[in-house]
Amino acid sequence: MISQLAFIFPGQGSQSPGMLAELATVHPVILETFAEASEGAGVDLWQISQDNPEDRLNQTEFTQPALLAANIALWRLWQMQGLPQPAILSGHSLGEYAALVASGALSLKDGAHLVHLRGQFMQAAVPTGTGAMAAVLGAEDAQVEQICSEASTADSVVVPANYNSPGQIVIGGHADAVDRAIAALQTAGIRKTVKLAVSVPSHTPLMHEAALQLQNAIAAVIWQMPDRPVIHNVDAAPKTDIAAIQRALVEQLYLPVLWTRCTQVLVTAGVRHTVECGPGKVLSGLIKRIDKSVSTYNLASAAEWQATASQTFE
Image (cartoon, rainbow, N blue to C red; front, side, top):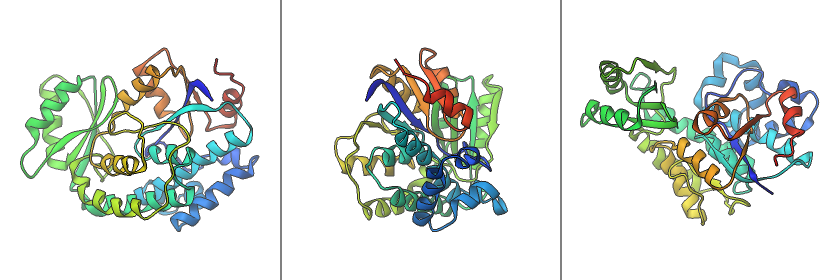
């Protein structure tokens, strides 16, 4: 394994209709992986990811297993070609499940089953229109935290949900509390706030009920220790036993994603190169804002694959 190399796995927001279609025409492992994940999820994930019937790819219960399948398809192709091995893994939100599947902690079939349920639990926990999320750009972490605290009431809360990079935080919670926080941020001079097109406020206290259901589902599948460190979102640290891994996945649903800290931990561990193992370039963009010394690579298109596969990562 190359100590300077980490693989990072993206989460929701990186999906797009037609993802991996180009690579799938050349590499059968892509369709094989989607078929295996489809068996676990109980739906045809390749059809959803390509044809997107009734906008199902953007419905969280289908987005999650489809993205997991895409991430692991690229990982398996990398393994088949005998390319340089990362010494450490991490994933953003849903991507954490891909990191665990890649590390051997969880089978793809079980992982797809879990994240399909995760999406269903999340959607059911918050009635449509009740929750909201918004991206806040150009604010200090402490300022966002204070404004969220002041905008929250006993029965209407808003909290930081994703610490994505310096100057980019996603907040989430009850829709009215999110609106109050946005207004307060604008009053404080933070002009760039963007409401996100999501109805499920992930990584907020509104997900407690979903987390309790997820806890039972997580306990019902077979786990192994990862074959290399996986940096978890809730505390930016690897785990030393299976119970701690399971607990981190449950807590991840209602606690914030500490992506800035996860990236900083990778850098402290000696990582100088990251490969985004999934569709899109969201995480690569965040990492460039967190630490410009890290080289970022992508795999989602044939051209990107070829360019990344030719690297030695020295």
